[in-house]
Amino acid sequence: MIRVLDKIVADKIAAGEVVERPLSIVKELVENAIDAGSDTIIVEIKNGGKSYLRVTDNGCGIEADEVLLAFKRHATSKIYTDSDLDSIETLGFRGEALASIAAVSRCELITKTASAKTGVRVQIEGSEVVNNTPLGCPDGTTIIVTDLFYNTPARHKFMKSDAAESSLIIDFVSKMAIAYSHIKMRLINNGNILFSTQGKGDIKGSILTVYSSEVGKNLLPVSKEDDFLSLEGYISPQGYSKSNKKMQIFFVNGRNISSKTMEKGVSDAYFDKLTSGRYPACFLFLSIRPEKLDVNIHPNKKEVRFDDEGQVSAFIEQAIREALATKEALPEIKRENIFKLQASMQDMNANKVELENNIERESNLGDNNHFMKTHKQQVDIKNLLSTMREEEQRIDAEESFANTQTTYIKEESTFFEPKKFDINALSITGSVFATYITALDEDAFYLIDQHAAHERIFYEQLLHQYKNNEKQQQLLMVPFVIYVSYAVKNDAFDWLDALCRMGFEIEEFGSKAFIVKAVPVFMTLEDAQAFIEQFLENIDESTDFKNAAAIEKIMVNACKSAVKANDELKPQEIQQLLSDLSKCENPYNCPHGRPTFIKLTKYEIERMFKRK
Image (cartoon, rainbow, N blue to C red; front, top):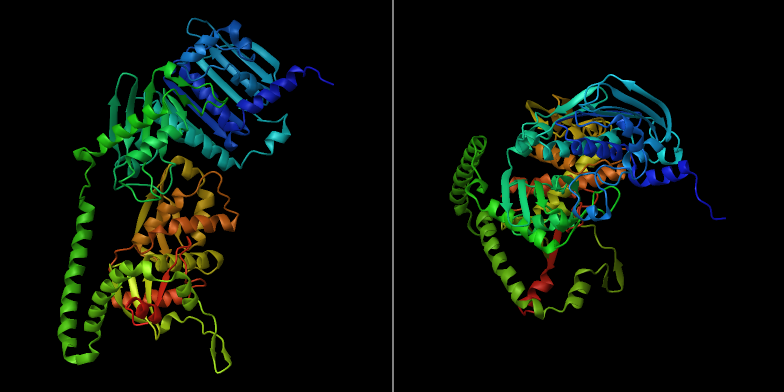
């Protein structure tokens, strides 16, 4: 039978579109507060907003005789006719938020207009009004939501943990505090004030308050305007980047959105400035004529459609390129790096002296001069690589593969099992381009990618620490401090435990800071700092810290702090690197799947020189 649903059922279905989780409620109420002309907004949550959520503003309030009407579906003061949808200038306009919220929670509204002598208090449970009385209260509106989804248990069970839900809310309010820097915003989580902005219209100051000085001090201002578009905001210079796009924050006409069009403008601007897998940080606020924009795409209003997407992305790209071409965008030598530079120069001079001493000491060793042989082999290898490129088309790929992949040897009808590849048996001859280690055995020449090799070692050592109870640590004489956003701080219980299991010793050191007192014994100080930064950048609200595979994946992504290409390694460092690699379960690939070894047999070399 086909029949019209009861109102209470229809309300709950509609609520499923607007109210998906506590974040949905906070978003709708904060946007309503902004539309109401508020200059102060307070958001308070408990248990991720599942048990308690309050948004208080000092806006225009709601007239007493319109309070109940505000809880009706499609009741709104933002638009009047369908033509208004073509030029929406407010954040809210659907008239569904309060009705949807009241349908799936216990909701209380306290409001008063400036002209009224008293305010009104309304309590609604599951769309049913249970109390409606006058009340003395300040101007503005307060909405309290408790027991979310108490009457829809099917939806309740799909919510995430308290920490995950609160992280989503913290992230959203943080972004709104930056976009609306002229509004005082305060966020309270489980009774603790996370942040409170001053409302003085200072966007960069809000970024420093909500995020950290490490993010803010690296930002460059962006400003551009034409007849249809206006862009303001901040971007990171070429020397500062992230391993993901979580620090790319976009607003259009004051609305926080996800936009592939704006992402494209950013990525095109940095296309020739950042290496693959690195992303800039940006806080971009785009203004566009309302008639050139459609926000009526999805109930969550997170998506928008531009009339001319190409124009928007090109405009953003040009604005960013202009900002990156300024004097302020040039790399800056800072005081803290001077001593590091001096130390590097001292090391270089020491290496030069050692090198000269080696030449003088070994020059009397005749044909067995190891150093001179190594130098000569490096030169020969460069020539060999050049020859390989020139002769590449002449090589029979299939025959080469067959020769280099032989797994058995037949000699006088005798079958021999192949020997296990012994990395320690290789004779190290040097390195080329400060990137590839060169080595030989009796019938092949090897190139070892030192970055891929060290990354594999780094990863397996971390994994071993994580899986074993006994941790090998080194205490730091001078501990260092890491700074995080409030959203990351909120999940500290989970990620702190994971890092401690890897061998770090970290403690809380302020509202957004942690102090690192010990690191795994195989890490340098720089390795540890880079790893922690990468690790925190790769976690989000969906990270399951109880899932070992998820942690291992994050560790893989965070192992970017391993020895980089173009790092000059000393002979003893090369020897130690290969020794450590030989102890790995899989020494043949880095954690991302790239090969650590490339082999060239003596037979193939002779073929290229036409000896065969």
